Image 1 (cartoon, rainbow, N blue to C red):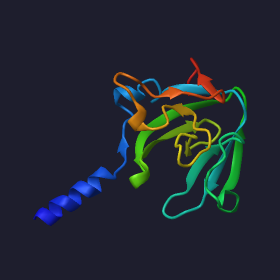
Image 2 (cartoon, rainbow, N blue to C red):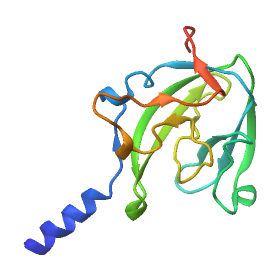
Image 3 (cartoon, helix red, strand yellow):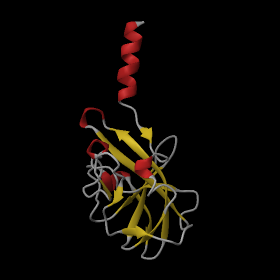
Length: 155
């Protein structure tokens, strides 16, 4: 029994958790933002679900095989709207935790894509602080890029 309990503690400590409804994400979740500079959406075809990600030249992927695995889908242009759908505290094991922030766009019906939000995957994450461990009491996750800005219009 003690081996099982120890295994469960290790397993749980490395898990990701949805924080969309927590105080730290209330200024992002279900909020709309306008695109201020072009943002490219790419897909990686994988089983069981394709994975969509937003990238800019500034937020290039740190993944070494980015060009060979990702397929260009569409460019979101200035004035188009996105809506943040979820905020996840994602575990990278011993490297720590980062944010995985997802959004949707009217121009891509039925597609949810990850914004440049994880310091492990992107050179210039769009959100601050970079890591959940850097949050101070009462602090919220904030937009830290000029590629998007809060919008009163919403989709």
